[in-house]
Amino acid sequence: MLGSTPSSGDPQVKSPKDGTLCRVNCAALPEKLLESELFGYAKEAFTGTVRNKGGRPKEGKEDIPLLVDHFNHRFNLLKGKNFEAVSPEVLCFLMDYPFPGNIRELENIIEYSFISCKGATIGLEHFDKDLLESHRKTMPLLFTMEQEEAQRIRAGLKRPEFSG
Image (cartoon, rainbow, N blue to C red; front, side, top):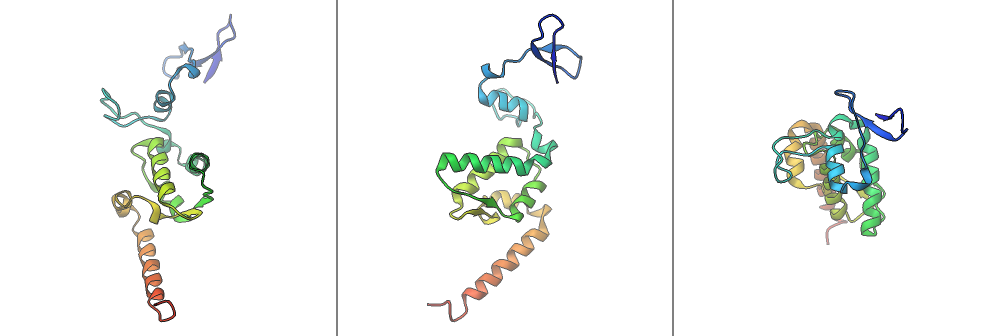
């Protein structure tokens, strides 16, 4: 929460715990430190961390589509690609995923799939297989539908007009 001292009018951050004011110069903090304080980190993510600190994707699932769009735009600029969207299945997966690593894990998932995707739309097939397997138990219907679609495609490709 922003506040100001009665005499100076300088913006400060008010701690919700004890009501004290603490001035924070965000420009002076390294980007990764600021990010880890705002969005959290996992135990042993850095040297000396002994506990988890929660981040927003765990608390703000409604922000995931906006964050996905942000990361997509960012990677388009960085990698010189023209990625357009994620499939509805990807968005469903991300909304359901618990994000133990918080926002950085979401960023890493998007970056991995961005690199492995050669088209304009990221699908679950572009995700890391270990990630999908670890989350498979919580999304059995989605994987069943995906497997059925893959079987239909394989069967279609075996038809005489597609075989060489």
